[in-house]
Image (tube, rainbow, N blue to C red; front, side, top):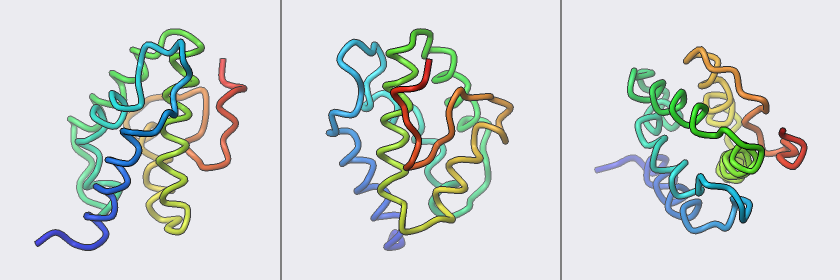
Length: 120
C-alpha cells in the first residue's frame, strides 16, 4: 500500500492539474507540466533516486518554455504545486533543487513565494 505522504502528493498533483494556474496565452498548460514531471515524484516525495527520466523531463520543460507567457505559466504551476507542500519544507527544498541537480538553470526559483509575473 502506498505511504500516506505519497497518496497526499498524488492528490496534490491531481489538484494541480485542475488549477487554472497558467496564464491564458501560455502554450504549456499546468496539466502538461504536472504530467511531464511525473518521473520526479518519488524523488520529491520520498527522497528516492534522481532518475535520468526526471532530468530529461526538466530539460524538456525548460526547452519548451520559449516565450515569456510559457515561462510564467510553468513557474505559476510549479509555484502553486510547491505551495501545497509549504508545510513540508524538505519536499519544497527537494523540488527547488531539482533543476540544479539536472544541470538546468531556470529564470526563477521553485518556491511558494516566487513572483512568477516578474519572470521574463
